[in-house]
Image (tube, rainbow, N blue to C red):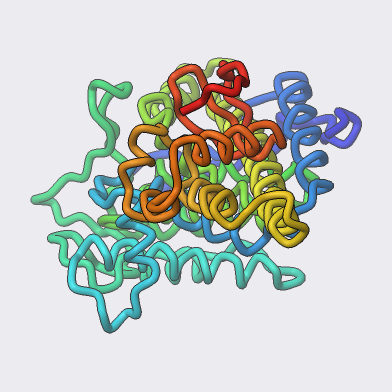
Length: 402
């Protein structure tokens, strides 16, 4: 995004809120246009290349992969224990089939994502406290937890103090405890976001800042992290970013220590009145968007290459360039989705049945032909690869393969 599209005066977008018991709470951009120009350009470039890729050809598969990966990512950040495969299985369940708490957590996140996608496509949608409460209700639905109170703003009794964070990630922070202060600050956050929109602040800056201040308010008893990431994703989706807003959860999981620490880094920098206290957090977010978009772009290319390969080997079978045995090998290899050691593959019943009444010479000739045509590659560890993936070290082609 060119710097001339950024507001010239960023310093004026400050909202100071006096609370009853917490003291003053300040919303600010906490960065300058110069801080962000290069990072914004990198994300804009990545996004431009991504949206001009053949997305329509792979939209359904990409959307499903992003859903599973992002639900797994955001759930794991908050202590979820499902693997990615288990997450995929849970998301395929009918709500009536849910038997485990972890499955319910995954389905709840999916429901929140669906709400997010729905509102983000509505013209004129804007962030509201009602939307935030609705997301929390979905995130925490039917999840047994001592602090599970869907949609209820936190109001600590004097006998209980809420802390956020730990010493490993920059220290513990005591957010507002009184429900009246939490309500006031949540409303102020929504209003401040409206100020940013009116001032023309790009969504790539607005979204992480809302995420940051939302977590500092910490308005609910449980589920704040998941809700905060959905809010951020919704703001980005409403601005036209596809897939990456939710896929960003995987980046946060992969960089979880930096992610948690930066909330405290920004808070402490603001308390010390440092220049650009929020720059590190926004930079982290922008780098996450850049990496995430590039990863998605690569995945689109991979899926397209796979589809083209599948079409090509089918055509090769039809025109008799390859035989049924060879086509079966390639189809099995494609379904596996990763290299297959020859020694392992040849022990499998389906492979043995192909050559039950044929000799080793036929087996060798079949493999040689597949490699010759480029439909399969054999690496130096004797693992077979589908032709659309080229391993770093390919075994030289000879007539003596076995």
